[in-house]
Structures are given as C-alpha cells and as structure tokens.
Length: 257
Image (cartoon, one colour):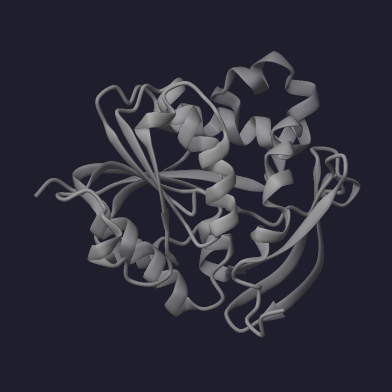
C-alpha cells in the first residue's frame, strides 16, 4: 500500500462495485441535489473533476442534456469502468486520468477557453493539506469560463445518531484529527458493503470559502434539501438528514470578465 494517506488510488480496489451506491438513500439525495444545481445544461460543456466512473457525468448528458462532459480522475480503474458502462449519449463523455490537486497539464486535452460548468463532487474530501485543497480550487477556477458555474458535493460532520446507525446507507467511523482537518472511514452499506478513507480540511467541513473567493469565485450558495422533490415526497424519512446534513452541494460563479 502507498505510504500516502489516504491511498491516492484506493478506488481502484473497488471500482467495479462503486456504482452499487446508487441504490443507497444518501446517493439518491446527492443526485437530487446535483440535478437541482445543474438545471438545464443544453448546449453546455462540463468538466467533472474527480468524476470517477462517471455517475454524475452520465446524468448530466442524459437528464440535463449537456453537450459534452470531460471526466478527470486519478483512478485508472474507475475511468475504465466508466468507459465500459453502456449508456445513452456516452459519446459525449471523455475520460482523462490526472491528479486534480495538482496543475492540470496542457497535454491532458482539456477544452480550450474553459467550461461552462465545473463539477467537483467529493474531491475536497480527499485533500490531505491546505496546499492540496488550494490546488483543487485553482483547477476549478482556471477551468471555468467567465460567468461559468461551479458545483460540488462535500462531506459535513453530522452529530446525529443516524450516521453511526447507517440510516441513509453510509457510516463515518475512525475519525482522527490530522494537521488542518480530519481523516475518517466512510462505510457504504451496499451488498456487499465496502469502505474507504477520506480526509477533509476544516475549511471544507465548515463551508468556509475563503480559498475559492481569493482565487476568483463568488455568489456561493448551498442547495436546499427541502426544495428537492425527493424530500418533499417523504419529509419524515429525510427529517434527520435535513436537520443535521452529512453532505452539502455548493454552487458558485466565476464573475464575467
């Protein structure tokens, strides 16, 4: 195993099983929040940083009607699984391997002039330092067109018992403080279950946006759970999560030039 923590390519070991999380309640609410944040993407280009096997990239083309999505991920195996998954409009998706905490090479082949939308879902929860976190935000800002939209999911640390009992399909355990943040294990209660390590800087967990604001983003908003049809359809089931969220979807804009 790599001496780095968390192991940078740990997703390779369970890439084939990863999309089984789509059946979990937490994944369903995540998708509902992202769908709300994306809106209608007809004719738009999207960069999906840390997009893994393309779960949200496929939704962006199939449901939001994005013109194209470039998925960038550190895990070769996750990208391979994504490429092998047959879905409508899969020709609109490209698969690119890179570490999104470091400057993205011009040879990667990203869209010249930038993207209309940049997604970074769960990416910040793999930053092991403020430097790595800043690198992620820098890639987001640099890849956006002026006026473009950022959206991304990140972990929050709920205090409610639902997260230890796994009511919504995931657990957070083995939490330990590290320099600038925390490391912890996320358990996915699929069949069979699997787990992986994450690290989050305090600024990510606190929804502190000083870094991206300094780099050039503004108009930050957190997508409201209660505005999704999923929560409206069964408010009692989602009540604990709404009251004490374990994740947030944040939206921001890059100002017009």
